[in-house]
Amino acid sequence: MNSMLKLSKMIFKERFKAGRMMVIWPLLFVFILFSTWGLSDPKANLPASLTIDSAYDVMYASTAFIIFSATMGAVLISFDGISRDRMTGVLELKLSQPINRTHSAIALVLGHSAAIIIPVITLNFLAVFLIRYRMGEFPGFDEFFIHLIGTALLLLWWTTIQLLASTWTKDVGASIAIGLGTWMVFTLLWLVLTSLIAGLMGVGVNDTNSLEYINLEAIIDLFSPNGVYHHLLEMPLDNVERNLSPIWVSLAAILWSLVPIGLLVRRMHNLNP
Image (cartoon, rainbow, N blue to C red; front, side, top):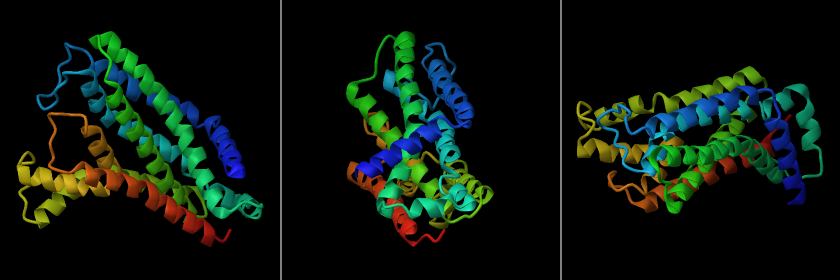
């Protein structure tokens, strides 16, 4: 355990000081803080479907920008977490060290995920004070806690997915191509996939506000990390009801936390540098 924590700390420092953070930090800053500033403006001209009545409403609405920027940051940080070492021959040296491969895989997840979680959480703390300045109120402690845990889990899931993709490639280009392709499916194309499944099941897609479509969409979202993230953040909201039990949401969050890590551990045990 001590070796695993030391390795994860070393990976975190390496990734946190990497040159790519010079791109990720401004990206996160613009998307998280600017979106919070705009959404918390009482005079903002928002779409009719978007209602901002409280500090947590601002935090929930800004998650669309967090999903777009922070998950991309997770991909950029971890896309070469294994493939680069494999390509240069360093992976063979690392795997020959007296550390269990399970611990090595978990250290990779912890180190890489911390490198993106810490910047995002830091900016979320600043966003809370922006909301207080603009609206005169803080979100509730339970609301902020759910937002904090949900965001950390989302970034953990995406980091693990990208590291898992990195184990299947022997060059950096293929690794980032798989990672970006997966990101596009879950972030940009998931609504199209949902509409396609709804059409195949005989659910009308011309009215996305119908109860039948909303219920189906809620179930399909359990198979997406971004969808589960939205489910988690909807728990404190009173005006959002997708007829899905919190038990199923919690179970999906647990599975998204355990299954990718389990696959990564298994892949690391079978990995041949």
